[in-house]
Length: 361
Image (cartoon, rainbow, N blue to C red):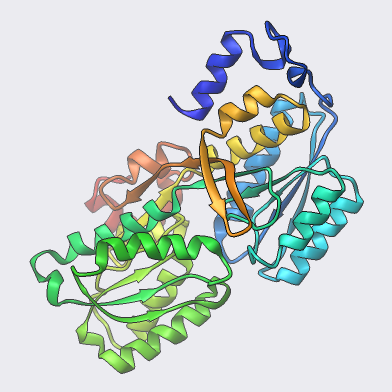
């Protein structure tokens, strides 16, 4: 049973909002006139501005009869800026804050200040340190496993002698370690990991510079595949290989299902991406935030069936949303079916013939 299903079952049994229950914790602390603070980390990752913010805003409105509002700020990949944005939200007396940390460790003092002010903090997409009340994300180790498995599968019988470059994310992002751990569980002992790089702030230009260095060190023709932790870096990696003279791009992974990445998959330049349901993650985060503020503890608990540890806290109530490998074979069944993109958005004139070749029109 999913967390959302659990919440619906609890509602049907009359235990949410105090119906049929005697616990005082079921009595809402506040009505619908609430303020949800939302802090997102950067604009380089297309999903944050295009999907996460509007989805959370829409869901908060729906849950509060259009009385609740979302205060939004994007840090532009600056941790100091994000800490300042969080301080402003605390000063403005937001009722709850959803934070996707630029730097999970550096945000901890700001989280503590929010807690001291009586404002719950929910870590969104990335696990922040400090006294957070809950965490909603995807199974990030599974993300890496899916990426690593895709590379091994693409290389087939040649995997054991194939040289792979690993383009990991930012070390300040706690998800990076989980992506890497998952990927290595599939890659180590099955391929030759020729080079590994960490990518400052997930910046594509940093990934491109690192890929150029890898090409110079290993030789373009000797690179059999590239593990790229997300789509922004995947595009940069592919650009570096094209600039070096590649006419056929080896398998390159990604994550986030950015529109340009899906188009690269259609054209055969990118091998796969990891599709993570933005709708589920955003909707569940909004539901968590509203339930927390309104004191609906039973519903909140139903939304957090999992538990994770951070370096500063144990047993954090969590929800981990599942992920899927997106290839040219399942575009219809993933991003199109979920309404993330239409076939028309994907199949522009540049990609029309490639779309037709895979029956995507």
